[in-house]
Image 1 (cartoon, rainbow, N blue to C red):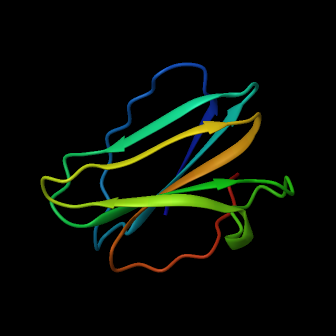
Image 2 (cartoon, rainbow, N blue to C red):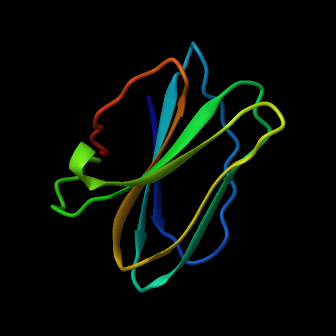
Image 3 (cartoon, rainbow, N blue to C red):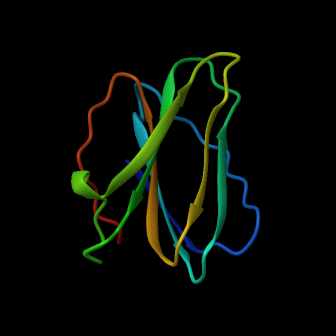
Length: 108
């Protein structure tokens, strides 16, 4: 699993990567220092993929299953998207293909 440390998310960021059989998921960790609107789009897909949002409520550096907020899926020609107002904190976005099950992942 590839883990990307995004740091403080203060403006639009774009990432281009791959999830599939060879690399079934990626994890992005980011921080918000204030309340703000969060928008995620997962596009350009050739197969089904999921984007899942977590808040690290216990500050243990893991995206625990009880910290799950929401998810959306997309597929070829269908964009996955998440739009929410989020408070300050450390968040994870996990992007995974449809054939991989994952519970939590440490960043660092």
